[in-house]
Length: 335
Image (cartoon, rainbow, N blue to C red; front, top):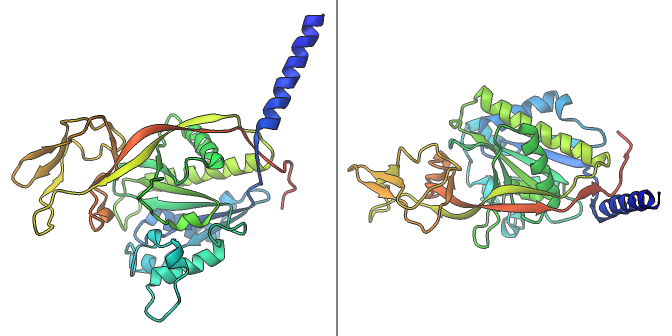
């Protein structure tokens, strides 16, 4: 009898300890869903426009979910941007730049978005932003993280991955000491990029759109469970961490002289080993990869990155761990 009582006491202490050790974060009350950050990436554009007219599927109790078309001029012209890349100008200099007549359209738009959803880095900023993108690369449904120490986002990615299984859902971590992106979604406390492909620019594919829609749904489901007081145990996810960008081979005039090798094309997230074919010159010469260890390329042959002198992004596999998580206020009343 004494042993049974001790066992029950230990169980109680373990349960209590687990609950008290969970990281308590404020409930998520405001969520933005961005589409059209790049005006020729149509899945996010179509979904945001649909949800602006009929947002029943994205509403969750006690949460304001705001679908928002981020770059309407670029969407109207079906181009990536008008003056400069909107997804690269959410840095302090651009957000604080004086508004004059010749200010680039996207810089002015960034300031407007920061005013509505920010200010960036403040307590008043939106809790969470899903920024919807398409890629011409064969990346599947990818989640993009900006911070390896954001327990909430790691827990959300873990939830989405499990909800989509067995379909893969790669996660790309763009945290890097020298590669600074200053993304549109970085206005939020918890920024999440949703990158789905392959899809040509200016085109919509039903399967790609549906994959993006499911990712957003599962993300919002996680928010609802979190707000209702569900405690999420510690978790670990595998992510691909950005290492460096790799350019195409060029001549002395800075012109491209080789293309992605057929054996690398469409092989996003697959290991690239020393000696594997990398590029193919127009003369038929194979340029192999040279490296000491396997890397995992992604954004392979992305159409939008030719102007950025980027043939693919080199990544490494790492694991991220999140602490147990719960809302600091459970059983919220619904609105």
